[in-house]
Image 1 (cartoon, rainbow, N blue to C red):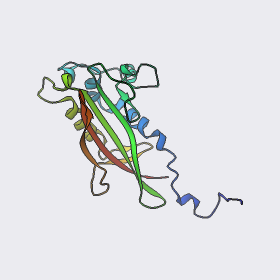
Image 2: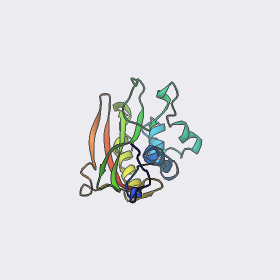
Image 3: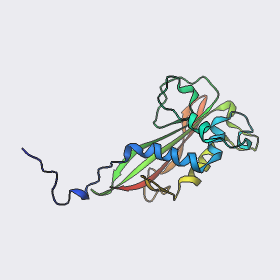
Image 4: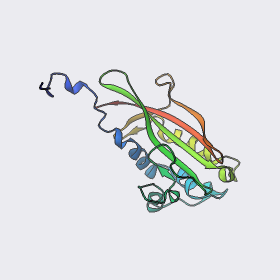
Length: 186
């Protein structure tokens, strides 16, 4: 049996060809557009919010790139934690968690932003928590923003019931899971 790839209308089917780039594109966007998140991830002090901005190299060094020792990284492009964390630190995980097709051409991809902080470093000297401040910055940075290769992100439960912020983690690393979506049509 021969399957023809050039049927009329084949281009009307979404191939989700950029799905594997979504996490990377979100991290790349944060590299250029948000200093607060990087300061809160790098510095464990209660004054982390008031530290000087990181250089591009310092930020890049916090992104996990498959090295053996994941404990030196703070930003991951997947879900789950394969290693036991024994340091007081804060991490950010960014990954696509669901695709809901609206039709054959357009689907809604939901991105999950997981923020986990060790209890001992979560409270900041400005009477805010590291987790909430990072989530606030993620919402402010991504909601309504056109992301190259991703589309316009939204935090809207009418368009996707996946969009919400919930508690997550396991003691002593507790955190929040923020789900935002985008329409994807190739």
